[in-house]
Image (tube, rainbow, N blue to C red; front, side, top):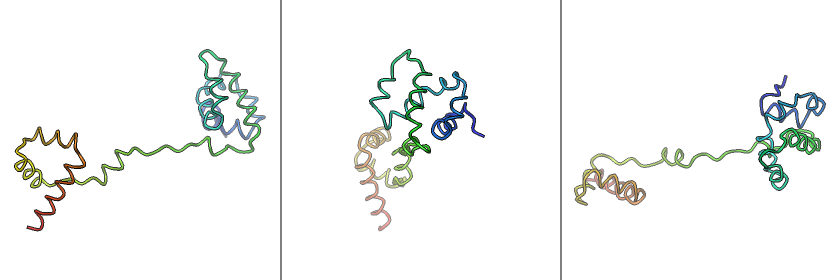
Length: 142
């Protein structure tokens, strides 16, 4: 059985079971006002913006969106939007990790200390890592 207090159960009731939707208590409908308006803004941005007013009656907004939901026989796919994975987690897994030997040689060659090395990594990460990778490959050959 679907629980009307849970957001996605409420959405499913709204789209597929109009008779059950009419029996839901008003305070449970008001509870989901913000997120339902947000979901519908994906497909109907102009209408959702009209409902995006402080102090608007949340129950009236839900009832308005329920009229729109009656046109559908199932929950439309645009309700369930996918999120994009963070780029930092994707790049950290593939990122090259230099050896201690290459780091020490780089610091000695450029006459810098650990603090300056960390700053070069912070501001010129790709270039520094590319140089360190070349150093690592050269050290392995010799």
